[in-house]
Image (cartoon, rainbow, N blue to C red; front, side, top):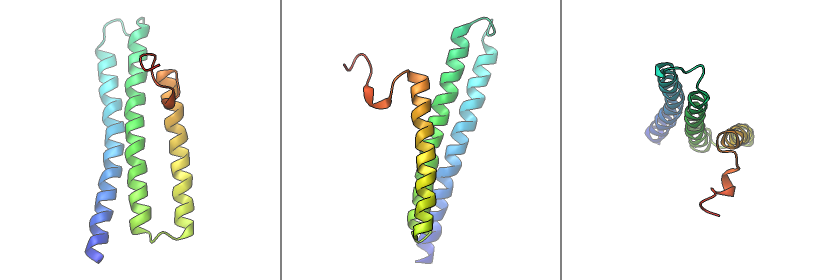
Length: 118
C-alpha cells in the first residue's frame, strides 16, 4: 500500500510540475514571438497575441495544478476535513482565476459558446 501512495504522490507532483512548466514555457514562447515581431511596439495585434498566448498558457497550467491538487488531497492526505477545506479553497480561487482569464481572453463566459454555435 505504501508503494501505491508513493506512485500517486509522484504522479501528482509530476502533474503539478507540468502545470508550472506549461505556464513558464508558454510565457517564454509568447515573449520570444512578441520580441521577434517587427514593429511590435506600434502593432496592437502583436500585443493582443502576446496577451492571448500568455493567458492560454496560464489557463492550461491552472487546470493541471488543480488536477494535481485534487489527486494529492484525495488520495494522499487521507481526506480529513481540513485538507478538503484547503483543497476547496484552492480550487475555488483557481477556478475564479480561470473564469476571469477566459472572459478577458474571449470576451464571453465559457458557457456562452461562440457566435458560430448560437
